[in-house]
Length: 334
Ligand code: ACO
Image 1: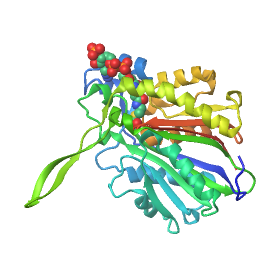
Image 2: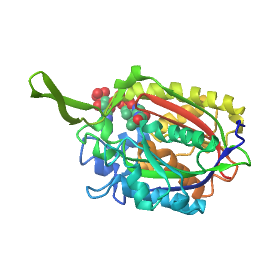
Image 3: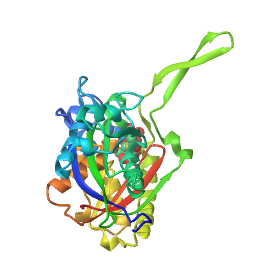
Image 4: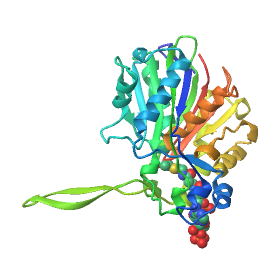
């Protein structure tokens, strides 16, 4: 895809990090009434990494970011922009600048971007706009979430699904071409109540006639079946639109890299696109659903394992709360 400035995007480094503690399905079955058999057969998940009370999103995000910078061969001081895709910042004002400080990216500007499990794909497209206009040269895009803080550990319909972690990529300006080949982003607020982590306020009167709302965030609420149906219907559609924009066909995809929510969703989307299972990147058995982190963690593992090679065409798609969904077709490498 060419653009007016002649400046394109390259993907030059990836990194990931996750908490050390691992909770198996058998472990979850000691918390709620469930079984390894139920969880694995319905979702493909076998275990998840969980942050301890003293660990922070900042730690995993900074580690993933440093690993991505090391692979890219650039220093933190060379980073112009940090975008942190997350819904579970350590601080509601945002955690991106905390990560900036942790890695020493003292020249960069940093901000959070919230689009739930679509956050990484939305962040990739956002980063590309800054690069293509010539505003920034080196962008560090991080997807990180610690959903274990916000899961109702008494609700077996949701608590079995989620895990914690972080992944990152370095995107760089290039005059040799544009590796972000096509994208399509969507949202539908009419379906917002299918998946929420909502603030609930109780009124508190300050003075006569002036009341404010005081409260806190409620646990994750999800209508699993609605979200499942939505994902299986909308994700293939949005990938086909992004492919059209990239002027590519399904046959030209080397890897399908979906948000790691449920193996059945991955299989159903691959089937609808008539893509063979060998092209589907999946690591949810070991991580569960890590929300905005799931795509970059899976990408980083596939790159480091030597499966994703320079020039490979990757069809990535995120979907989740909002509801939001989106696809980005990109090529790995300079
Ligand atoms: N263990 C044992 N039984 C369970 C469990 C469990 N962990 N969870 C639910 N059940 C039971 C239910 O109680 C129900 O029993 P009942 O019929 O006696 O009431 C039965 O299993 C079926 O429950 P469903 O909720 O209908 O199960 P379903 O087959 O839909 O699977 C699942 C649930 C895995 C959550 C599925 O709906 C799904 O994957 N949905 C998509 C979720 C998703 O992709 N989210 C992504 C976005 S996440 C984000 O944006 C943060």
